Length: 32
Image (tube, rainbow, N blue to C red; front, side, top):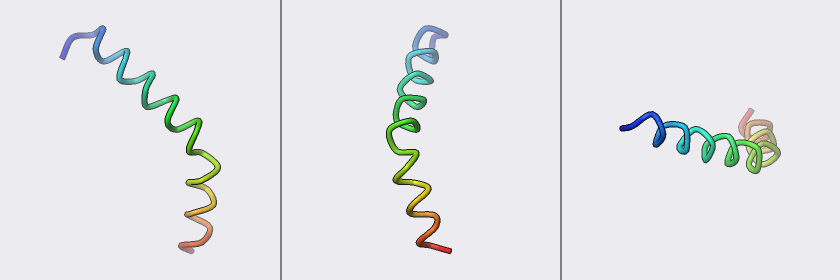
């Protein structure tokens, strides 16, 4: 994987985490 590709992938992950942050925190609260 090229460095450029890794940068793009990291941005995709960051965006997904930002969008799913609330949902994930709600899920973890329900699981516990």
